[in-house]
Length: 163
Length: 124
Image 1 (cartoon, rainbow over the protein chains, first blue to last red):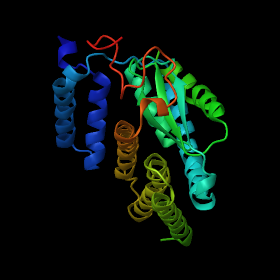
Image 2 (image 1 turned 30 degrees about the vertical axis):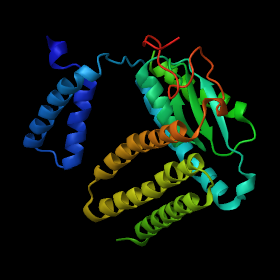
Image 3 (image 1 turned 45 degrees about the horizontal axis):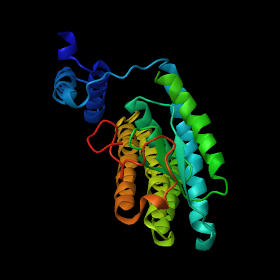
């Protein structure tokens, strides 16, 4: 019964927090309105999201977020450098398939988002059974190196967060 | 407002301006759609991020309160930018690329744009 009412407790908590952050003012009325949102939205969308993701080692998330933010800053500089100073003919783009060890949809979504936000890579599509992700790399001489780096830097950490 | 704070705000704004400009320039310079995707998804995150940092510093110096709106904008940006890029890439692949132009997937199934998922009628 409780599971029917609150199918995703973490999402409910986050919606309350996001609502309070959006109005930017903490009052009782806002808290109640936010709680109503936090209860109703997960209930309405539960049908599209039947499984509850399990998160192990939540403190690892902070480490992951910091690493990704740092990588985004580095990525910006690298991509800006390529755009400004490389001649068009010298830019060698590659399609790189990366076999995945992650299985949960949430973990793969986070990985795909991370790949898109970080150094010169954009995730394009998954294989039909979700066991492989196709990544486009703006400029590299070593596609295998990029694949290994994504696997060791991001996927290994995500595997610790999502079992 | 003290000079140091104004300096910090100015630096953040200039950095964001530069990256915004470079991101837009990338749209002109790079040669095909997938390459052009890289410019807005990367260069613009720091472009928008710089403005948000400047805004946070300004309002903290002016009112003494930390404004959380900027953090929310960052979160929404990080959620939506990869999804947009992903959809553009998929549309491009579906319209302009043949399956044999891409490297094969490592598993038993091909890329989801061309192949049906396991368990559907036409699969296998």
